[in-house]
Image (cartoon, rainbow, N blue to C red; front, side, top):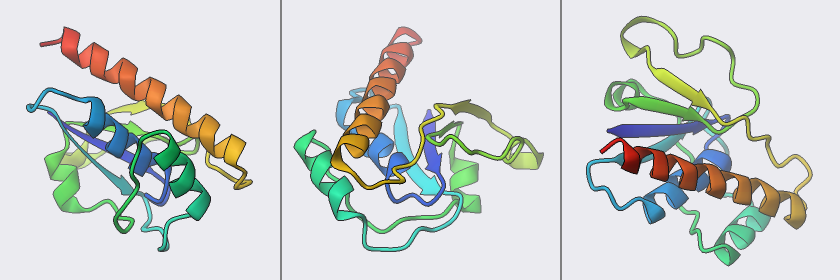
Length: 136
């Protein structure tokens, strides 16, 4: 199974989901990548990197945008965003099952807000791993 985590820019939420999921997932038959609906600017936010590192998650790499290659690769899309346009991936050969976690963006840049978002993503990732383990 191939999981594609998406958010608006692939600078924070989807990168956190990919990194944490890959850290806790022990099933080698499940792969995860992330991308943004748009390609975000670089470098990544220093506060987000710092708080993620404190929580054991390493954020690295340039933001990536969704590509045809990724849309062909994925079996499941998980939207780590609260503003996914309805029906965006509900068409043609790239139609996919989509799960929306409805995680808001870090609009204020404060460490407390960043930590709250990351811990919510971590909890959802842990729930996803447990659910996928039961489906084996």
